[in-house]
Length: 467
Image (cartoon, rainbow, N blue to C red; front, side):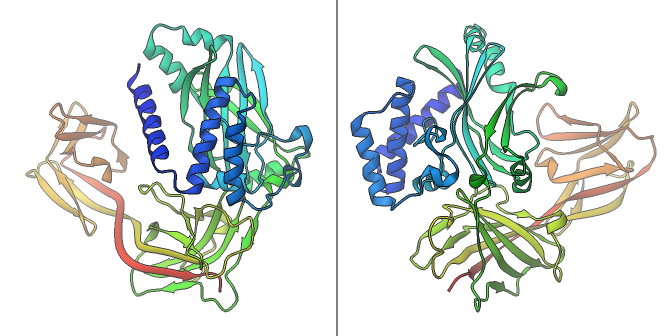
C-alpha cells in the first residue's frame, strides 16, 4: 500500500472516530448519518438504503428543516430530479445547508468512451460554486488496476488526469481516490470549486444551458488533451438564483480607524444557495492592500455565526480588478465568501461583520549597484523588515553567480541588468542557494530587488449591516 493511500485511509478512520464520539451538533450528526448511508449505497451499488437509516435522516430533517423547497421549484420535476442525498461525498456546510432547504442535486450524467465509463453524481451548482463526484470505471480502468508497477499505476491514476470546466475559471481542489467496489475498480474524483460567476452567466444565456465537464490527460498535447467531455445540464432557475442584501438605511456600515486600515465598508452581500459573497470597500495607507481578515465571520442578533471560507493560511479575500474595480477616493473593492447562506429565509436582525486582526501587504522594489569585487558576505536592508544576505559573488564560464542563504530565498526576487536568474542551484549541504545569470563579465551590475512587505495588527472590527 502506498504512503498516500495509507494516510488517506488513516485520516478517514480518524474522522469517523471523532464523529462517532462527538455527535452532539445536529448538522454534524446529520452529515455523519448521510455518510453512513453513502457507504451502504456504495456497497449496494445505489440500491435503496435500509428503513432504519431513512428514519434517522427523517428525524434529523424534522428538527432542522421546516417546509423545504421541492425540486420542482428549481426547474426539476419527475424523472428529471436528481438524488435526495449526497452519495459519495460529505459536503461542506454550504452545500449541506442548501440541500436541507430543498436545493437540488442534479441528475446523473453518464458517458461511455474508449473503454472507460464516466459518471457524474452528487452534482450541485449555483453561479458561484460547484461540487460533484466523477466516477471513472470500465475495461480500461481494470487494465490499469492490473498494472504490477505501483508507481506507474499511481502516476496514471493520480498524476496524469485533471478535471476542467471548459472556459470556466475554477478555484479549489479535486481529491482523487481509487477503490474496488463490488468487484469494479473506480477512480473517484470529487471537485469542490469556486467558479467565475460572470462566465457562468454567459453559459446561462444559452438556449439549453450546459456546463462542459472535461477530463484532461496532461501527458498529451494540449490539442489532444481532452479525452472525454460530459455535458451537465443547468436548469436556468438554479444558477441564476441569488438574493442581494444591502445595509439597512440608517446603519453606518463603515469601520473607521487611525491604523494602516483607514476605513472598511460593507457595500452588499450577494447570497447564492450554497455561499454568500460580501463586497467590501477598504482604504489603506502607503499603498498597502488587504491580504487577510483574521477570525472573520458574519454574526446575527441571535448569535448565529456564518464563518468565512478560509484555510487559515492563504489570503481569504480577493481584490476586485478590471471593470468593477472603480476606485473611490483611494479605496479598493474586495470580495470574500461565507456560509451557510442567507439565501433561504429572512435576513436576520442585527447582522454584523466581525474580525479581530488585519494582514496587509504592498509590492516594494529597490535598486543598487552590485560590485563583483567587493568583500562578502554582505547584508543589504530591504524594506522595513527584510534583509538580503549575500554570501558570495563570482563569475565563471559566462555566468554571474550570486550565493545567498537557503532561508526562504523566494521572499526577495533578484534581477541583474534586467534579467531574471537562469538557474537555481541548491548546495549539497543545503545551506546556500546559487542564482546564476547569463550576463557579460564586468565589475559592477545593476541589481533590482522586489518582493512583498507585510503588516499585521490587532483591531476590534465590528461593522453593522442590518438593524
